[in-house]
Amino acid sequence: MKKTILACIMIMLISACGNVETTSNPNTSSEPKSETEESIIPKNTSEYCTVERISLDSETEKYFYGIWKVEKLLGFAKSYNDASEYPTGQKFIGDKIIIKKDLFSSKGLKKYSNYQYELKNPLYEITATCYNSDSFYRLYKIDISDLNINDAVQTIDISDPSTKLSIPVSVSFFVVNNDRLILLSEAAIFELEKIPN
Image 1 (tube, rainbow, N blue to C red):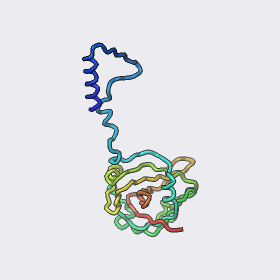
Image 2 (cartoon, helix red, strand yellow):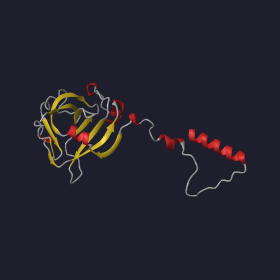
Image 3 (cartoon, helix red, strand yellow):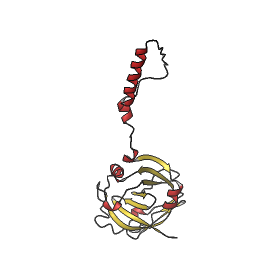
Image 4 (cartoon, helix red, strand yellow):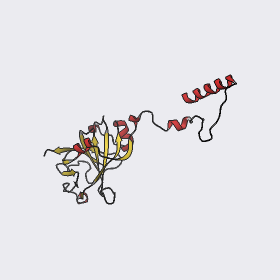
């Protein structure tokens, strides 16, 4: 809007001067961008999640790699209920997941044969970054008070490096400000605790 007003003032000034010559270049457009074009770009990126596939940065790698124990059930996504875990989610509690640079293994989730998966030299990628609980909710429709998301949340996808296909289990990870690791399995949401080496 400001650009449009400024352009109008410039045109009025040029018209008033009468003796000013203007030339046009056919390769450039002097027309101001429409308001709808400018409104597509969010002005405050903290209200949105960035959705793009990028490699893990060194700080996230340092936090993410390790052996993790399923510590507690935080709740369930509202999209649907995972019948295998609803309403208690206790079957995952105490089980382990191995996340290393050269190995991913969910074979520690012992009570479910569908989750028994192991991948050598996995490809770990950040697929989305949300900047607060509102932007996280807009993207995932997960609103659980125990999540306490007030910082950046990165969604990490695990793929087979040869096929680039995600692991064939319904498991996602959320890294909260490199301070917490959340497991989303089907619709059940768990907090993980890193086991010290």
